Amino acid sequence: MKEKVTVPGIREMKERGKKIAMLTAYDTPVARILDEAGVDILLVGDSVGSVMAGYPNTLPVTIDEMIYHTRAVVRGTKRALMVIDMPFMSYQISVEDAKRNAGRMIKESGAEAVKLEGGTKMKGVIKAIVDIDIPVMGHIGLTPQSIHQMGGYKVQGKMEEQRRKILEDALAVEESGAFSLVLECIPVELAQEITEKLTIPTIGIGAGTHCDGQVLVIHDLLGLLGEFRPKFVKSYVDLIGVISQAVEEYIKEVREETFPTREHSFYL
Image 1 (spheres, rainbow, N blue to C red):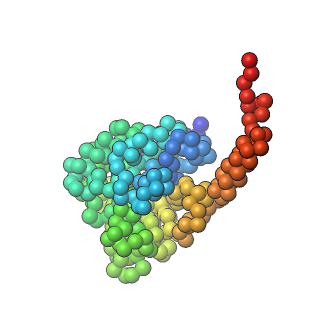
Image 2: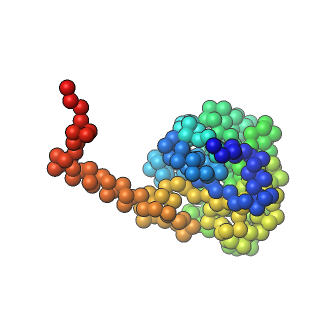
Image 3: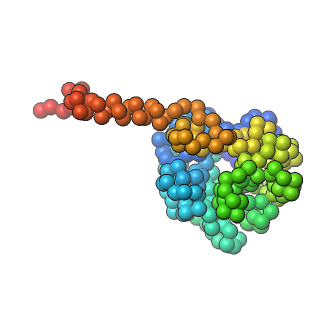
């Protein structure tokens, strides 16, 4: 097995100029495949609500759902750093709530770090969680838990005022003690500026190549979400086509009675 990835190890990757590869995972079999392939960070994202449960967005996801899926991913992971998303309203009410929920999620899921959305407004929350020795990954730019405030899934940071605010958010997240920062759907130039200013690694999704690493939702990478494909997504295979072909062949063989054969049957 390759060397276990740790929080200090992720920081060192930025220092060495080695790009960080991060993907989401939600179950044991896929986690095992991704881990053995060499992914550095596995994120059990609250995107589980959209891609696994069919919710319209991430807002309905609960702490219990996050813990359930993270336990499954942990059982399939040996090397990658395990990060769990803190779902909507698990950290926004109070610092005490945030600490209690972060602690519960780490303790019950087996994850090694939490991720939460927000910049300057979450500075105190991030610091409080870090102060009880729970590593925090930040997330700014397009923050899916704020879609109603933002008016939908839109690129952030195109206007000067937005750009300045996102830069302030990035600096606040670093000052609060986070070990890394996700930059979602912001202009390439802004992502480059933030990456050069920060000492902690940036991980981009729709933020260009200058970030210290990249993250994708595994269902997007595998082509499992059909025609819905944001600009920043690259599908490396069309698994819908592969699965459909296999299922159609199965249906055909069942109806023609060519499956099961003697090879797949038991006899006295």
